[in-house]
Length: 226
Image (cartoon, rainbow, N blue to C red; front, side, top):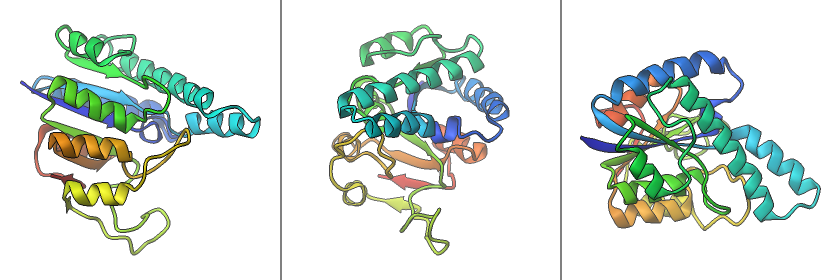
């Protein structure tokens, strides 16, 4: 059975827009596809994490502590998803890649969250994919793939349906140095997937049809990075 890592942004999971219904539908999708692939889901922090980080930064709190705030939110989001999966996943999010791999031998779906300060959801997902030898990574974001410019700000932004790893690295830019960044894909993670040649599917996480196809390796609306 193929292993697939899903990097699920907090801005997709709990943006404050009918989240309970989305979580029910998402859990049903994950339960369904987990009969065909071994699923590892890494949850991000989203706007709630950014709120705590921005508030803490305004108070003069250091970046390491701010990262720890963000990690706490990612773990809360992972617990929420695990509860929605109703017994098909581990209740407490995995804290290490080895623990996630071990849980994968007992659960149809494994949930994981932030691990250590300075490591984004994308970086955790890329490292987990390397550890478990995943067939692909699905980056579930708030937009339908990688675009030429920010589609939330530019109505003329064009979807890039296919990219090379080199193009992804160039687009991701330099390594981030502050907590809570919101970027197309973490620069360090981009280099990890490029080294490992792990296909990356970037998709709108709330488009469940596209998400399902991306997880199963079928054609999907979004961006394929190979």
